[in-house]
Figure: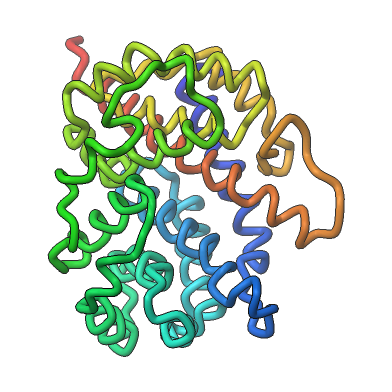
Length: 306
């Protein structure tokens, strides 16, 4: 199997698993108030983001595109009840950005809830909304989502980048798990989830080109598959992706025969819902990394002189 085919195969398997386990994308209507109703919205929003990338890049086969459409339809119509759960969530926590962040990729895919949009616009006018305390990378993401929605970002993205860990380009050997996830999400937000690699400032792209190969080696050796997958996405967002063969081969070898990707080392044991909650994210990341790397590899091939 050649390298591009191996990368593509990872995404095919991941999407098959996600479709087969689509009922795992569920809300908990009677959840303990201390946990919060919105806690289970995050997986649904992540699913919508990855499906949007898959449709945008156009490298999936007809079966994969059909599975992704069925997945996103299921999430909108059943999990979110046509957007009504987003309205309920926003009413329960008016200042939470989570319903807005979940809604945006659905809107970009053609789904609509006018009632939810009215609530978002109203709440985001509040000074209290702008005053919400959050990390720089979280603020960067919210500002990017506001721009994409058509709202003026309460804090311009350019004003936030320099406050992120990656924007400061610190000592690369200090990176640990939490910092690494901040790095990956800074790249996701600056490039609009891989759509615009030119969104990376030149100095940031240069820093990543120098140090990403080292981080890929580290997380591969630690068998941190979820984080390794996100770093492979970062590689595909760079002006010159490396498509690191060792990292991709290790990542593909960790994938299970049914397409599931463990988060760390091997698959967890437990009840189906418990296993889903641990495995859905690295499997989504596997689909994301696969489609973006495949797209960039084919683009490079198309522009290679014959």
